[in-house]
Image (cartoon, rainbow, N blue to C red; front, top):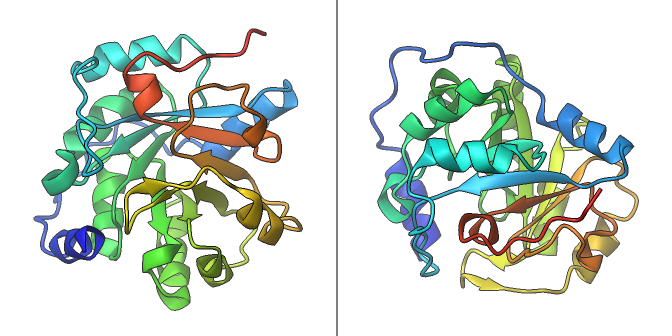
Length: 240
């Protein structure tokens, strides 16, 4: 399966041996809460060049222009896809993004402390961990390592059974990915995920297949991660 191959390849990447950071770590969770206090959803705009689902970024190939464009609509953070083999990602994009004063989520298939160090050295503020493919022990260890670097952690899941593996630390940002990464298909029904998260008071972010900040599916989420619709210019903002 594609995801298993991606994880195996990620273990063999050449590490970044010098820090490219020019500032301290910014808080994605603080930015989301600030937007929520204004009665709005926290929007995380994603940048990627392609994906195994068939998406190819032809509209926004210039990362700097893209960041300037999405920053003007009040985003809470930037998600930078850094996996090189299947998504054509690079940590150079993280370094560029972190110079814009917005929290940067490093979106990758992270299963080692080495990749977290790369994310930090490149300028990332938050990392993504995927509960569907990591054990509870791995999630706890990787979360703890990232926090030692003052980075935040967004742990996403698609399979409701993976939710129980997520550590109960209050500082974790929860993500529900509507896309099943095993099949690459989007399941537009969040009911099962919402039911098991109903008593969880941590920040919740909805991911994949989102086209508007005003979707009713977002009612019980604090934020949203928007990729393809933002990149191809079809995403609809909600007027203040």
